[in-house]
Length: 577
Image (cartoon, rainbow, N blue to C red; front, side, top):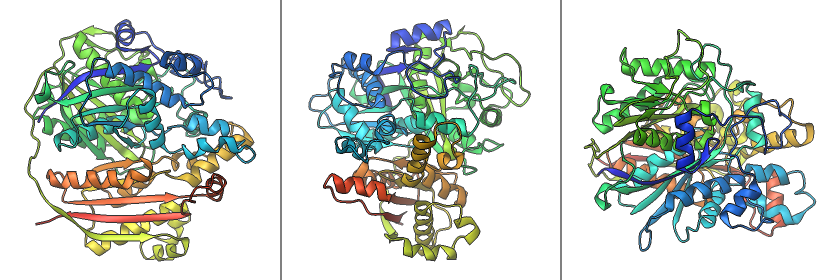
């Protein structure tokens, strides 16, 4: 089955809508500028903001001015409405799959210092999970009664959402999938990236010898996906895709670019294409020294001396983190439609360790385009888009699977067993939830007699809540100048899944679902789909959540059941022979 792209929608620093985006893309006009809407102490940092205030976005969407709604939701709804224009969904099984990590953090950080005194604000903390933001975005965009799914794998989240959407269609789980991602700038992740010392104080210059880091951006993009048998696609087809794990470090890319190399190679294999068939690569290209060098190495390994034109459009939009994969996929589609190579703005000097990007907007006929998106924890994904239907190599084998191990812990006293698997020195650097997830995962693998699974799939409603709360508390009480990089890099929802993959050196499929109480259901569906389609024989599925004393007290004040202080469950699924 081939997947057609029937419509697209986009909002970023270079435009709201495809027309404005394409014009600025052709002109090479960057949207990176001085901070205008984000209320941060770090006014010195240039950012790629969407050029509308929250009030203007609400007006555009017909929302009341006094409604408190996340900017992530607003941006997503704008892109969604464009993507849905002219699409008939009546009587169809429709799913919305969205990638985000920040979610409603911009609202959370605004109310965080007031929630202890003002009960009227408690509803916004309850909606802190990323899944509730996706549900709200669907409601604002006029999508009612559809399935919603949220994926949070840091900067590869939106591309993984597109991959998930394609897999759902191929498995017959939906007639139409709207897939992509949305992310707004927040003080939380601006300060987090700043604490890692990877933000440039000038406009970013991906692959340039003088590069000093990235500029954060924001935005959203969505694709309407259908099987090509359901009609002629308007914007092209998705021919191949893959997600692989670098399994190297939580924030740094491996020197050999192994995860990126495996993702790109596997996407080509699925599309039944060779490296010579790729006309253009939209690189992840963040502008950080390590990432650009690692991605260049992966590109050189894959393409040898015949690297096609490459550019990073983050020099135009900024790094839109979890939304970047969808935004850059839409940009790649527009470039293919227009027949242009987007320029890598700001590049000045060759780095001997990097590829040479395209630095001017060049006219070129494009039939096959590759788009890369890499996230924290080495979560690397690659997508191949074509201007027509191409036969691909999808394994149609249907396999059954069964659960061969299932381990649960629900209190901290059980963590004493971790010493059987991990040294005390190492456990001292772990938070409670990571300890629990590590214990249940390693114990389940041991019971199943498996050293390393083919895939790691994680489910979580709130992620690394303790670390997020500590980072928020520090930012609220002590200001934005001296914040912990360790807390930030261990606050992302996919910290658990990537930490387990790094420990096991598992380079296979790795994804994290964050759809509230439905997260485990989505994770198990994915695992069974992988095995049924012959893409994995063994899958580690985990459901991991924690609740801090403050978080539990907020639920108590809302007269809602308190979430457990700690819960971790690891399940091993295996193909039945």
